[in-house]
Image 1 (tube, rainbow, N blue to C red):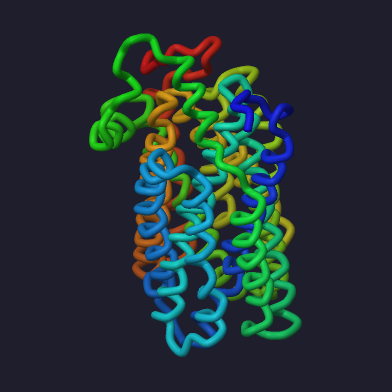
Image 2: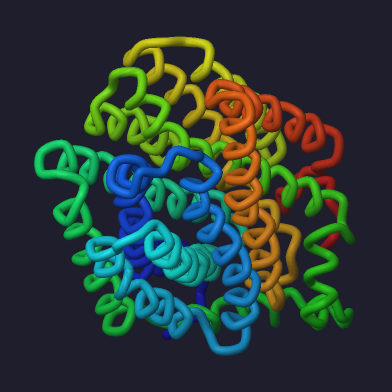
Amino acid sequence: MSAIQGIRENWQQFVLQLLMVFAVGLTIGSERTVVPVLGREVFGLESLLVIGSFVLSFGFVKALLNLYGGKWADTYGRKPILSLGWVVALPIPVVLVFATNWWWVTLANVLLGVNQGLAWSMSVNAKIDLAGDTQRGLAVGLDETFGYVGVAVGGWISGVVATAYGLRPEPFFLLAGVVLVGLLASILLVEETKPYADAEADAAESGDSDGDLPFAEVVKQATYGDRTLFAAAQAGSVEKFVDALVWIAFPLYFTTRGLSVAEVGVVVGVYGGVWGVGQLYTGRLADRIGRRPPIVVGMFIAGVGTALTAVVSGYWLWIGAATVTGAGMALLYPNLITVVGDAAHPRWRAQGLGVYRMWRDAGYGFGAIFVGLLADLVSIEAAILGVGVAMLLSGLVTLAWLEETHPNFGTHGTR
């Protein structure tokens, strides 16, 4: 295997990794529309904090696996960790089909958190390995595009199937098929990409010890030791409040206001689809103008779009608000990952990305608590507005502290 970086030079494995992350997105998307309604209508749950427990468990478990997945990837390689992520996902559709109480659903989402923390992390690491620094933004944009288009398609299909056939078991047949295909492809077709990162690290060595940081020091550097990486971590964590809101509250909010499960699937699908497809452009845009502008603008746009959801009323207006929110997410999401990829030394890049993804996906858990408490104590509308305000405040922090990390005209001095 050649260790020459570049998307064109490695197009076959790059395309395979795009299909892999699309499958990862389908896996989580197949839960998005159906599971919250399942909690209310099958298990009789009323509290959004209790219903949100399945997102809370998912978020914190995925955060932890992101952290250690990055460490394991630098030790054992990307391919075995990717395959392990798919192995863990095998029981998920079975548990969801036969669950007799809500805590079984929560357990299934623990397994989903492991799957997403390992499989998605390894897929994005592999693309960064293959692409090299001059195409890193494009690589991450493509990764997140295919992943979140998968989320959108999974949410839409499961909503349509649930409307036609019921909440169980048919919506989870797609999930079972995707997991099996993902596992087989990861074992039989995916190649190891760690040699690309090793070759890049060898070329970047300049006699210093930047590439030899111990794991604890990487955690410190990527969390609070560097102001730019802290700004990225807090922005990543808060933007997951939006995704937690969409996952927990949107199906319940819209169905109580007259939308069918299929229509909810369309609204959620538009949000994910605009987010996903938009990243085809926004990742490449950041390679041309820098990472900072799209991140800062995206934080404010997503905050406004989220708040609009509680202000407007009606199917098409909610689709419009979902479009605005998705556009903001498309601007900020891949470029936050790229910031960390720029700033981290190639020898600990997977670990640095793991730390960032830990804090980012912990936002699912923090967001589930935030949304659940506000909804239970005040109203769902208050929870939606609260998330919008949180995004705007986080955007101000990002504006103040995030430096440009683009290798050609960046101001960040970590490397």
